[in-house]
Length: 91
Image (cartoon, rainbow, N blue to C red):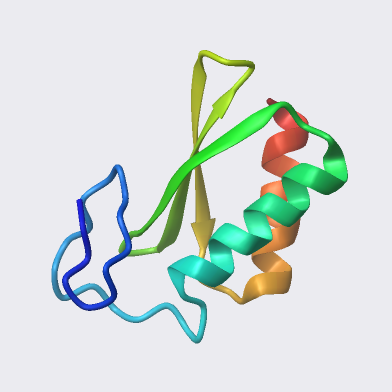
């Protein structure tokens, strides 16, 4: 799907009229995911991020074939980083 507002593309369609998740945008979250993946040295390829009613969904490919979906609450970048680190540790 392609966002008409900013031109970003995503593999997951977002629903219209979803609440804005604080001041976090898709690009900031993508940068955060890449930073955490690099820091943890996880074999992971980010496929996309999508806004959901509760926050964000991160979609990544692990180990060349496993697709992982991680749901993050819209609580700010620091809290989302912690949630993401816990989720990556569990995979």
